[in-house]
Length: 110
Length: 112
Image 1 (cartoon, rainbow over the protein chains, first blue to last red):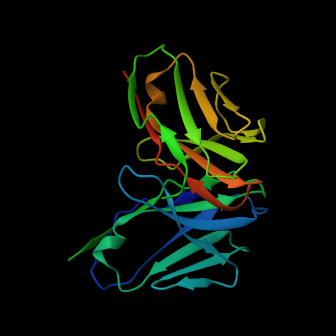
Image 2 (cartoon, rainbow over the protein chains, first blue to last red):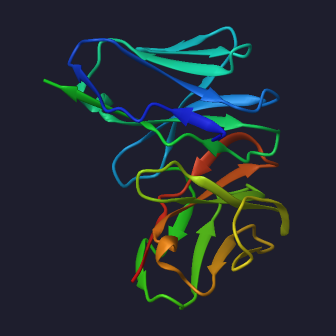
């Protein structure tokens, strides 16, 4: 079983719509959780950290469910510029060794 | 701009050759991690260096080796290159393994 699993998509989303997707992780003792965004052939960039209480950053909302070991990301009012691959990332301990999912591709269409 | 720089950005090697990739961490960052990202996959952790010592290793064979220098820059060396080593190699830096982790733009390696 992979350490972090994601639906690869693609999620084809009309501009202005809402899209949500999840990932699951296998290590229940994992400490920190993130969503990274990766554009084609570029490095991953931190989108947001994910907290158990849920957190928002503008149009983006992330949620962590430790009991079920899944993380979600919701994008409201999708923009064309949101088209990217979204990587679910788990940090199992305090030493910055990240475990990545394979990514969920989002394509926002006009 | 993350302050993490990698070189070279692109290179092509022949199967069986050796390659060295370089990373300069963000100023003051003493922890450097290396990741391999094959096409269509997420990055996979290769190893981490903290203050010039290896501080953890992923599931990669010994022909993947590394170094960290006193200025905290780092090298990734891969011997006996295989076709499956073709990937984007990413360097990430942080301070004491904590806080925000910054990625470089990566080195694209093609093995033919």
